[in-house]
Length: 305
Image (tube, rainbow, N blue to C red; front, side, top):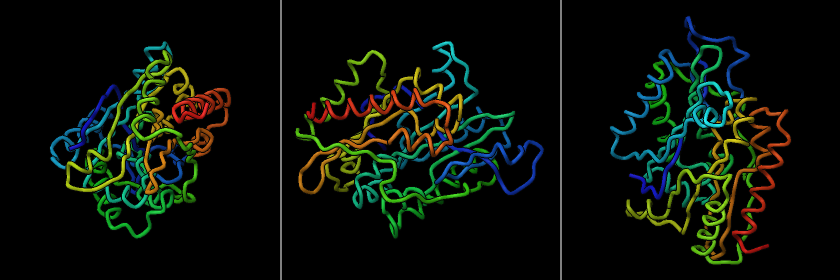
């Protein structure tokens, strides 16, 4: 079970299948996000979401880390967004070996599934293990096969339908990952990062996860590795209004990790990479603002300012 330091929000996955059904949408609205698997739900979104959450809660090897209702967050700002929810969950027995091989895999862990509605069709979307393997150089890691099967079973069962893969599954190693090296030790870096985010009135910390502590709870070893998830709906909502699928990569997160040489790093997803991944072309102002904010936050936490 994941040890959760704090939680305030939300879920992922997309859609389309090989069978024909009354509610199957035209192919042009199927998600086209590199490195994902998706399915069209045969049941209403809340029913599918609840079914997945129930299945996760019934598995004592899995812990739900956070849930975020992107549409509700948008509404709180007086903005409109179609039903869009994400749920984060993990199994340290399966995730830890991936981070033992490459700690940067922690940037895409725990697992997450996005649910959203488009043109009366409900989609479920999540990152494929092929994406994780290519992005974090995890080829040959046996746990990936088990993770893939578990995700297909959980999501397919929730939406009561088959799953499909996006047109492209692979990216280059470390693609879209920005890393800053800290001049401070691990704990000082992390606490500095948390303080900077907490003191910014535009940001809300949604969850904190100690990957090392979770590994130790299962008798596994892992170098210091923590991730903090935080968001700003004022900037994230316009992106999802253009492409709901980017809700899979929101809220923002920063991974703090100590390498084998004792050097400490802060890593995050490059907003430009995310905009290309989700075919966002009309939100340059928001992308630039997010990029600048992440650069400033990580450099300050690293003691580089």
